[in-house]
Image 1: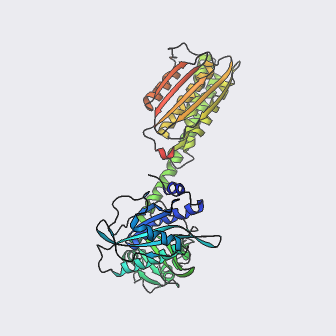
Image 2: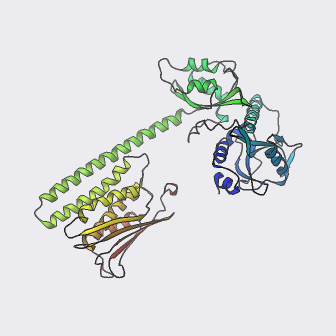
Length: 494
């Protein structure tokens, strides 16, 4: 499915600033849908004087009118005139009579999406609110208040006061929603309405009275423990003066707060305060942070231990009187160092994924000593991108490539000058790597039987489930091709 940005840019009528504004508005689509108990659709104009839907949000507490996704669809004939009028006049346009949609009576409101550009109000899209009249019943006080809040927000959308790009974006987890708890404040910060869920959240924090009629600042002052540090943005949030977020903590309970100041053509008339008990979510986040820190520390210590082992092998190799033993110890040192590189990279980040291009750049340095051997002048360079790989892929691949590049220099270019090229070709589901040298080459069909070759086969075929092939390049040199399936990798990170 196309993203909002793709759909907007495809119409050729919106700037980057317009797209950012529309993204923010679409991000609050669920809030609008829940407050209005209606489907919310965001439209942008097309080049042929029509409109296309770029976002659609269904209400979580009411029946939806659209059982099929309409994002990407053009505006239907019965709404076109109303949507066009709202866009052209910059005013909110209500349907004159109930609109029937698939045998269901509905009421449609078209709201122009305005943005201030250079002091001038420009209409960049239209929001339609589709209310199902088939389930109409006597509204509760909460529903009436929610609808009033929705009307205020729609008025702000039409006047360019909502969304506010200075407000922080929603967190990935734990963002308060209207159904989690809503408090309505007047211009002086006095609570005029508190939903049952909002009252319950403040009760858990230690406030035992009714919220309505109380100054929220004074309520929070009573709740906060003495001599306890609190979120610096909390005073701004509870007064309703700025569109901000904060956490309120007391008695082992954490409530996430979000304030949306309400304005009438620029004049502040009050605020909406959304609240949600996120105690369990914060505990889980803290546990994850502790876990991540522990994992990073483990990788750091493993890296240190491997580097110590590599140093011991290097010392032992230098003291060895046998050329064969010296070579074996040096190769073992390089293998241990290659694994240490992966753990070093993992110790620097939160995710258990690594930028393998960075890892491989460091791995290439490990063969610099081999390339500097007497009578050998090897130039190594790589092309293409490996991308991001999980650690379970990165470690065996780094070790295998260390072996292949080392073999290309030690054996393919032994006693001569030449190049070793590493070519990475990654798609969504496969990674192909070719290691090519300009050396003497192998007799076709013959592959080395040494420990290095056995290690590479075991790593590529056994651990990575891939294939490996050695063959001689026409003329001279050897090319080794590795093909690895990436079926277990999160492609969004590649």
